[in-house]
Amino acid sequence: MKLSYCGLSTQAIHFDTVEAEVTGGSLPVNELIKTALQKTISIFLALVFTVAAIVALPVSVVVVAVAFPAWALFKSTKVFAAYQIVQKQRETIA
Image (cartoon, rainbow, N blue to C red; front, side, top):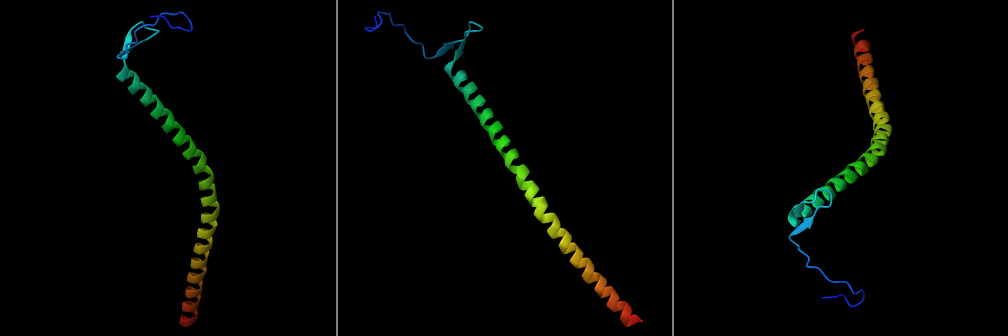
């Protein structure tokens, strides 16, 4: 059968195998789909981890910039309160 617009003959397409150009062998379509899915999932996971790393760095910087001074202030107020208690105890003993 000829294609009407080009004058080329048509070929039967075998959907169960795909010819591998490099090795000359054939791969089942299921294997080809499986490989494509694995590569797609790998690329997707790499992108997800890359985005997570890009987002995590500024978030961690902000957390440290906010949390550390707050923790230091809380700790200093506790130390100051403990110092005042010790001072009062010394005054009552003396």
